[in-house]
Structure formats: C-alpha cells, structure tokens
Amino acid sequence: MEGKIKQAIEASNADYTEVRIERERRSQVLYRKDKLENLETSSELGGIVRCLKDGGWGIAVFNDITQLKEKVKEATRVAQLVAFHNAEPVALAEVPVVQEEVKAHLKHDFRNVSLEEKKRLIESYNRILLSSSNRIVSTNVRYTDSFREVTFANSEGTFIVQEIPDLTLLLVAVASDGPTNIQQGFETFGEASGFEVALDREEDAANAAKRAVDLLDARSVKGGKYTVILDPGLAGVFIHEAFGHFCEADFLFKNERLAKIMTSGTQFGKADLNVVDEGYIPGLRGNTPYDDEGVGREKTYLIKNGVLESLLHSRETANKMGATPTGNARAISYEHAPIVRMTNTYIEAGHHTLSKMLAKIDHGVYAVKAYGGQTMFEQFTFSAAYGYEIVDGKLGEMLKDVVLTGNLFETLRSIDMIGDDRTLFGGSGGCGKGGQFPLPVTDGSPHIRIQNVTIGGK
Image 1 (cartoon, one colour):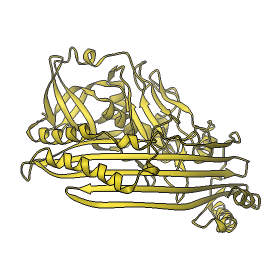
Image 2: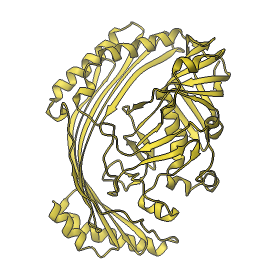
Image 3: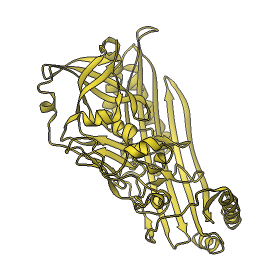
Image 4: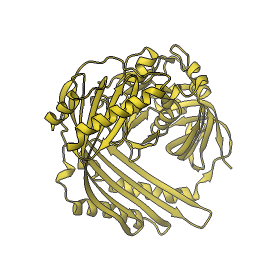
C-alpha cells in the first residue's frame, strides 16, 4: 500500500497533496432493559485525498485503493473550482517532515476476546443494574471497541502509520416511582487501552443503580446564588465545553466579537488558573503522537497563570493567524477532512484539599458529574448528575435538579480555589463539532470552588 500511496502523490499536479487511509475493526454490545439490542462486529477500509491548488481545497473520499490516482485527480479538479470562487486563498504553515510508525501495545487485546465473551460480560452488568431494586425500570449498558490503523502521507515527504485502539463502557440505570419522578444513575469509562478497562466493573454497576434510586428521594435544590464546588468530572466538562471550543482557532473566524476577547494576554482568572490541551497522553482516548495532518501534537497552555496564552491550530489556521501549528487537526473518520479539535483538555492541579475548600462555606452546593448542558457563545447551562448541600463546611443531604448557569468569563474570574486532585476522564461519548460526532476526547480537572454561581432549581 505504501508504494501505491507514494506513486499517487508523486503523480499529482496539485500544489499540495495528502492521503489518509484507515483500516478499522470494531465491535459493539448493547443491552436496554432486558433486551439485547445490538451485537455486532464489523470492519471497514476507506480513505480521503485532500489537494490544495491555487489556494483552494479539494477533497475526494474512496473505499477502493485502486481508485487512488483517479481520486487525486478528482480532488485537484475540485480544488481548482474552489480556488476560482475563493476570496481568501488557503495556505499552510510549515511543519517538519515526519516518517514514523506508531504501534499500540495492549495489556489485554480486545481483538483476541470473542464477541460471545464480551456479550456475557455486558449481560452480567445489566443483570446487576436490573436486580438492584424493584424501582429500576430500565437500563442502558453499552460496550464498544475499535482498532484503527491510520496511514497518512503528503507531498512534503511525511509518511506516518499509527495504530489507535479505543474502548468504552457505559452503565446506566433508570429508576422511577411514578410518571413524574424518573431519575438516572450512570458510570462511564473510555480509554485507548485493552479489554481490562471493561473488566471488574460490578461495583460500578451497583453504584449507578443505587444512585438512581437514591435520587428518587433526594430533595430538589432551591434556586439561587451559591458558593459551588465542582467535582473533577463536572469541572472537566465545563472547561472543555464552555471554554475549550473558544480556543479552537477556526471557531473564532466566525465570531468577530469573541475573536477580540480571545486575544493573547487577556486576563481570564486568578494566577493559579492553568488550562491545558495536551495532545498526547498514552492510554487516553483518541491519543496519537500525530494529528490528522501529520503534525506532532503539543502540550499547549490555553490559560497560563490566569492569562490567555495560546489557541489551538491546524496548519491552515496557524498560517492565517501567524501562529505555530499545535497538532489539533482531527477528523472522526476517513469520510471527513480534519478540523481544529481539542484532545486532552484539563485544568492543572492547584494546592488545596477538598476539606479546605469546603471549610468556611456556610451554605453551598457540591455538584457532581455532568449530565448534560449547552453553551450559547459565552453563556452556559450545565446539569449536574447530582449534588450535595454544603452546610457549615460539611457535605449534607443529596440534591437533584442541580442546573448551573452563567457567563463563562465571569465564572472563570470567580474560581477562588483549585484542588490538588486532578483527574482525567475519557468517558463513553465524544465531542461534536462541524457535523463530526463523536470524536474521542479526554477532559478533567481537580475540584474547583467558584463564588456566586447561579443554580436553577425548585
């Protein structure tokens, strides 16, 4: 295959040509309530050609590698048409030429585990959820794995082959004691690792079911303004969703007002606030040393000592903004061109223990896990999976319907304590942007304490 790729690129008359070919093998097991809804294994081979000609991009997708030379010609023709109508020609920032092969090393390779064995394991977790209480009315237990071999080559001489494993597990219990009180408890896991990630999760399944039942009797939080502590899971989702997307350089091209706000040197928080997008951390979801443009992934400080330090870039956005590519061009599959995406985004650890953060809070809220949310420019709304009342510096009774709303920039400035317990989470879902979902990402944080947070409730 390497020879065919190089021959096709050498025959191209585009100004720049790249080829990305992916081989993928995957499996899935899905239980809902007492029914096995999906049990499958599949494989796929496909590729994408991108050609740059006269400042315009052309793209062609294929599933037959014998079509590669013709697809390069097709992409070049498309690029010429785009360039004719393109008011702002595209150019790419320079990056080093790379030739490397990256192998995955799995402790317990899920490719060697039968589909029947995977089914038995997921079925056992589903039984734990269903049998935990007669108030459990439904479940959602999903296992997925995939193993991708991604080959990338371009006309500059880069040739990279990367193996990318991915495994996820979702355990959801739904409890009800009537049509108006339905609650959910869940645990979710995701890593670029082996089958061991899915094993020995019986206690996690029991905890998810217990939490769903406990939430039926929990008190709804009273709406108002509180000092709030976010657990690492919710804080990680907050920094990814509410802030991280603003740091994706292509996003700022579409919003002139936010582009003016997101300028290097802008103060966003106190001096101990550091936000990082770290491109390659072995074992975490979607991680490879190189992005989908063949650029080495970097550890990029988005906020350093409270100040905006950098944005995330592809080769195109870096050239446009006079910056250096950060290795953040990513695509969910060969069917898509890469766009600027986060990788492993987190708040760095501070110096405070959770007990110290709780101290001197007369009346506050401890919010745990992200259940859902949305952002509209700098305004955000996030639902915690559950919470606890904080009374006189100690955790009190369980709370539900904990919905946090506010302005991102005001909230960042209101973070007054950062914990010493940073944790990273892969999860079983992914990030969505530009019609590409779900992209495997990781986010995380230590506990963080925020003053004057608006919480909706009853």
